[in-house]
Image 1 (cartoon, rainbow, N blue to C red):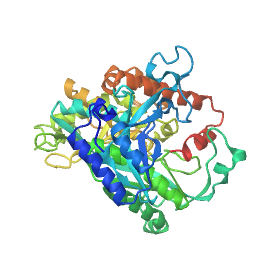
Image 2 (cartoon, one colour):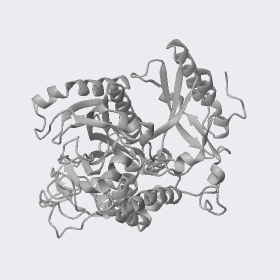
Image 3 (cartoon, rainbow, N blue to C red):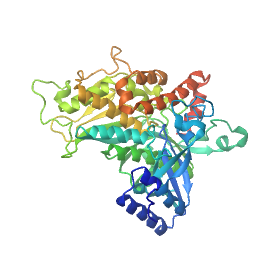
Image 4 (tube, one colour):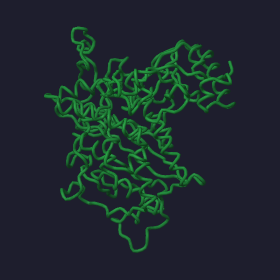
Length: 496
């Protein structure tokens, strides 16, 4: 089958002979592998995969013609309630294309085909939503990152990132609380669980052996999905583990994070385990999970690390950024610090996640940087002459939308580059109360984003307004909840 001249992918302006050849290759691979069903997945504003399951022939048609999806899927808050009254006159004046729950069109990427290792006979394709007239949807989070990276490329740079992700895994004891129809609610209860290791023995060999069945499933799932898994480790908290991945370009890394979270949760669930990427599971004695984003800029013409300084700037001391970072790295660091308040809700987008920002807890409280200091918001790793020099942003939680998390770094960093923002000296006491504190609640962080024109413009005003509207609904429900622990249990624990 070849693309019609008026086919949807052609109207979107993305179809060319190379894409047509890729579509034909997908059809061949599906038939050769005996695939029975194809999941079409796209990433919502919360970083969760949604999608449809098509039969192979329909999936091949969708590569060229797209497939319809209800537009309200882009308007859901974290409890899956539509955050706009789409059937009321005037309620969607800010997003007119969504009035009446009108359809969007999902268009799959033929280069994204993977076979799901935990579901025999099932393939998966990544999609992005488009309006029915063939124009892009500006609040699609992957498109937000693509646009940010295009602006960065105009400066001659690309963003390279490495993922370091903590999460919790539990053994399910009883799924009835979640699946009993008599207990159904919106959102419902999670299953009853127990820990896979007791914790408080960081990287303990005995803990590793105790959790080995889970680690093996995580490893096999990641590797079978083609993800560049580097290590699996026992974290400090009970039932907590960490996965580290090789660095790659930002868009690829974001795609990989979406696949990893989705695949690990589904593969473990089939084996009787529940993986959760919420920051603070609703139990006593837990340790918060973070998502630390290692980042550097590369020069597009040479591939060289643009943060590397050949030698420390003359007359500087280790507490000065220019002792370790190039001018480009210093200004990028300055931009991240200047927009730390607005970054907070994009790096930590759940009400639960703000409980992580506590003193002396390996989590940041203030907008400061440090030389290899894990208490600072930004940790500078490496130094003059070191090709692996990078900045680690420790502000993130593992539930963050990867595309928005990374796009936020670009928006802040680009402002640092354009205004040549000079960072202050490094902090040796990142929990000093005199430092400027980052927002301590989701609501305050959302207000900070709304008040930052550089960030709202950098992310796109339509996309930012969409994000703020949805997340404010979540923040309001959390503020109104009498039992915050029960809110966390139902809203996040088994849903992210």
